Amino acid sequence: MTVPPIALRANLNNEDDEGLNWSLLRNAADQAAIVEGAVVVAGTERFWSWVRIRRVDDDGQVHFERIGPEEAARSVPRAS
Amino acid sequence: MVDRPKKQRARRGEAAPASATVVVRGDLLDPDALREDAADNFDIYGYWGISVFAEIAGFDLGWIASNKLVNARWLVIFTARDLLSAGLDLWDTGQSPHYDVVHDDPGELVTRLVACPHRIVRNPAQSPGGHR
Image 1 (cartoon, rainbow over the protein chains, first blue to last red):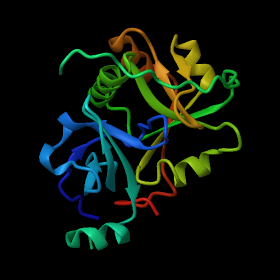
Image 2 (tube, helix red, strand yellow; image 1 turned 90 degrees about the horizontal axis):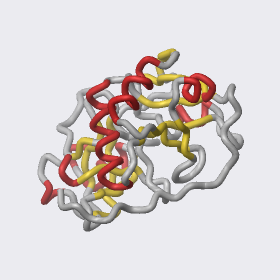
Image 3 (tube, helix red, strand yellow; image 1 turned 135 degrees about the horizontal axis):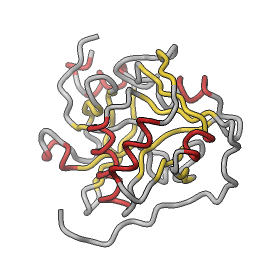
Image 4 (tube, rainbow over the protein chains, first blue to last red; image 1 turned 90 degrees about the vertical axis):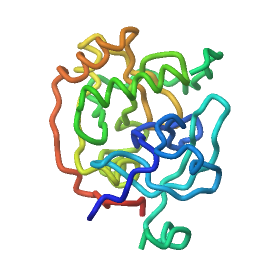
């Protein structure tokens, strides 16, 4: 599978206290795109997933959940 | 980044994993990536930590590989005994079966983790591109 552009560099091993994955806003290709509800690609070229942004904290911590390609395609046509 | 108070990381308060417990991390051990991950963790939680998962409380390697790490092509597998023997700590952070491998020096954290005995296996459950 071709890796789509990574919108949010992230380590998908990371989990917060709620069990959500997380990264930092400074790791985003375009910080303006990382908002609650956005569906983007997070991870690295070897370990990535479509994700839905759940929350962006004042300290720059971005919380997100991994979603399947089918769910991503419903939000982002290029995901299909 | 503005110097602000760090978040308090929740600890579950569980007993330390048994020495033979399997500990797994998704993806290959890239020292540069590990340093970046430890730095991100420090910026948010105020300690140098690298996320892993452990076979505890009924969560076995198959479950971890097909749920937590389903998007990872490679899995790196340690034992708790080898991590602790390397002078690293295992903190029961977040929700089970998540842990952080911790050391108070970021350079030592990465060096010791990479040098720790481990094996690398292809993730048989890998599903590129999205959690299913």
